[in-house]
Length: 162
Image (cartoon, rainbow, N blue to C red; front, side, top):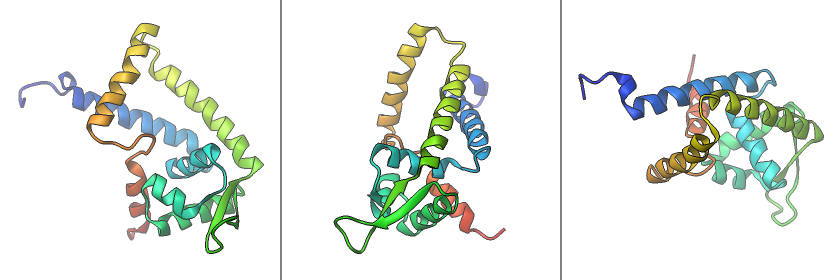
C-alpha cells in the first residue's frame, strides 16, 4: 500500500472528490450568507415544517444547544420563525419563511448545476450505477442518510477560541 500512488486508492479519491464538492457547495451557500448547517436545518424544515428545535437536533445529530444557536442565526436572517408548539407548550415550532423558501429554490438550482458539472464526465449509464454504489458504501459505514458528518465539527469549531 505504501508504494501505491494515492490516486490508485478508492478511499483517497472519494475523500478528494468529497472535499472538492463540499468546498464548492459551501462557497455557493456563502453567497447566500449560509453554511451547510443552516442548509441542513432549512432542508429538514422544507420536508416537514413546524418541527421543534429538539426534533431538528435529534434528526441532525447535534446537541440541542447547538440547534438553538443555529435557529437563532436563521431567525436573525429572517429565514425561520419560532412559534409556540401546537402540542408541547414547553417547545417552539420552527417554521420556514417565504424568504427561506426562495433561498432553498436558489440553493437547489445551484446544487443541481454543481452535480451536473461534477458528473459531466459520466454518461447516463454510469450515473445510474454510481448512486446505488455510493449508497451501499454509506450504509456499510453506517452513515445516517442525509446527515453530513461535518455538522458536528462545524458547531465545535465555532465554540473553540480563535
